[in-house]
Amino acid sequence: MAYDGVDLDGYTIEGVLGRGGFATVYRARQLAVGREVALKVDGRVLDTPRDRQRFMREVTAAGQLSGHPHVVPVYDAGVLADNRPYMVLELCPGGSLGERIRREGPLSVKEARDIGVGIADAVAAAHAAGVLHRDIKPGNILVNRYGGVALADFGLAAMPRPDRELSVTREALTPAYAPPEAFHRADPTPAADVYSLAATLYALLLGRPPHHPEDGGQLSLAELIVRHTWPYPELPTVPTALNQVLRHALAADPTLRLSDAGALRDALAAVDVDADERPIGFGPAPSMNVRPEAAPPATALPAPPAATTVNSTKTRRTWLIAALAVVAVSVTVTVTVVVNQRGQSGDSASGTKSTPSSDSSATSASSADKANAAFGGVATTTDNCPAASVPDVGGRCVTTPECWSGITDISGNVTVSAADCHTKHVWETFAIAPLPSDGMTNNARDLIRHPDVKALCSQRIMAKSRTAAGTAAAAEWNVDIIPPSTTQWADGLRVFRCVAAATTDDGEITGNNFRSGG
Image (cartoon, rainbow, N blue to C red):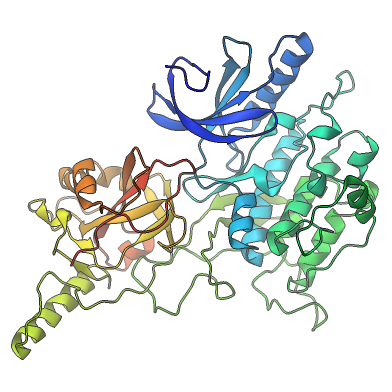
């Protein structure tokens, strides 16, 4: 059945994710493999050879880069019956970094730097393939369901060759992130992408692009062109070495700029963001030595003290993304999501209710302590808990709601990123249980096949666990599991969680949607 005038064999179109100047992006389901995807349909009709050539350039550019971990994959492409071109892309329910900084403000120095290294590596790969992006900005860096970041919209990509016309025009650029030479009709170069990426990192650190007014007021194109000639505006709470890298990458004269994305990647990776981040002018600059590791290992799910946060400089939710291994000029980027479990508390921590009797109260407290210890210090209950109805599994509900921003599954080894349930998140816990006695593994892909796990982490138990005040707009809920992490397994934790994610327009929900027992 057609949706919004779009009908594509093999796909069910479920809604609109967004509309831009040239294209509409739909949420769709690819029926052959049962996965949700983003379907990008161009509003322009391919009725001339030049238009078809431009679209094929876009498909070729994007397809060449789909294997990179920081490029949004392209699954399919073609032309609709009405000659409008389409592309099928990975669905990134976390939205864009542009949306995030508008919603939450600037990122931490470490997270912004790590994102910069990953995206710079993707841009370096694009340049090696002869592809220019030409519209790098926070709005084109998307967050996938695992919390990883990837560069999207190679629709403006050009493949500069001596015998090829560059059909991309200035009107297609985003002025706030475009290099100064773009306003003088200079040919696109890798150095132009370097400038746009550096301007993007600057915005992630400050909340707005370089040279933009603090009040968020709009600038005319003429004002913006003049401001491009101003000196680099220092970021006062950023390490000196990082300011130096950004200053070099944002040089107005492209001949003085970092010449390629690989050089920007390596320079960013060499900045010691773990050093004391004092304002500029207070002591020597941090060392530019390359560090073998730039991200801490994933921590365990059991709750740290309530005052502990992943990032002590910010109280808002932070998605920590890249762990970096840098050797000489080669940088390998891997995704590590750091776990941060909020402290749990509450009197109704067990299924045994207390009574006025001091002996009964002591017994209840003892049972609660044992139950909490068995679940890594997380308070649980069987009261009003549908998970407890599954026989011989030991299912329970957490007494304090748990929410998660992303799940990363690499060959069955899972790490997760905890979120505040009062802010936007993707997953929520609806059941917790000990590992089956005949299924002692922390590999998610093996564990999910166990009949006890399948019975507990089922659509039936998930549906019974939903609260009446939950997300009513979600037409569908997906179910997944969180087994013990490698660190938890080594520490002796033998529990798993059943989690659910709602199908919504942006892939996220707010508030708690599942029973917390009691």
